[in-house]
Length: 398
Image 1 (cartoon, rainbow, N blue to C red):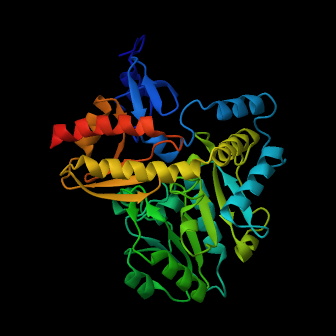
Image 2: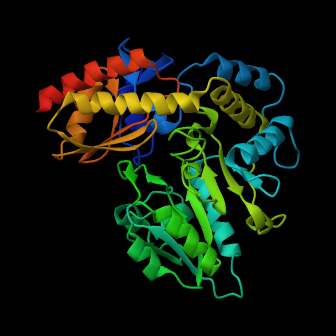
Image 3: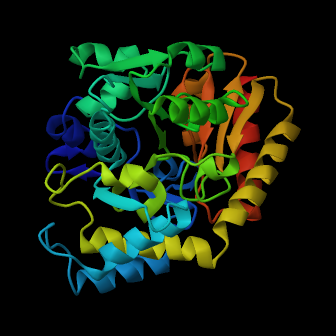
């Protein structure tokens, strides 16, 4: 434990940071690839990746070089000026999302900000003025700012801050509930292709296709929150590309810049015409440093076929976990390298803590789920290491 003039780092953390954050048990100092080290010299295998953020792992030379080069030239200019990395990233996002020529991109600083922009976009889709309803799913997560929190289908997160922004209704994640909820007053439907914060829960088969059908029929926007599922994480650039649909807008963040804060709203087709000049903005959004980082990360994902790696390693990881044969694992969910383990007992928090003690970083989003989101660069040796560590931890709880 590091001792300082002010005491341990945990005491300093508790004395200085807002109480909305729990004091961590580990303080990290540096990392390389799929591993990180704490301040006491202990090495950990990182299978959470900063919650699906560190797409290239830690200290990847492509990202490090891009940040150093851009920082030496231009870090920030405000939204009164353009920069080459900003335009390049917008064009790249239009290409990899399939938004094409009609597509447009708005840059913010986080996933929550991207969803705030999407909320505003939904409000602009008023039609004759009667479109006042916005639909979202129960047990969903879209962020903690007031607009994105209103979209979030977790009452426990919303209740301390009520009244929420008006107009949002949360429905069950069933096709029957979706059909029952729709009418011509719906302005937009917000959907995570996989519910990451809920424990990596897959949508019912046919749900996204029905959502596209109903939103098109009633003149509503289909907005997909790809913040956790995007950027190659689920085995394609974006999860929706594995279904026979095209959304009206998607929100992206997390892995887009490998840890440098950035978020984006990408619009498709006529939806790109809804925003007018001056209706939304961000001082830091799309600055040269963040967009240069994102270009480097997305370029490396493409150059090194990391999306194919996400598919192959994801399949390998699922098979290896299933082969453990632990009675604690009831189901394996998700796609690519976004994996949820449904537990047969409510021991996720204890499992998470024991894994950390063993040198393995995973996540327990709720009492009965474990979430895995390793860097997209993960290889066979790291998967073997994971299975060795995870098997040992599981045996200790069985």
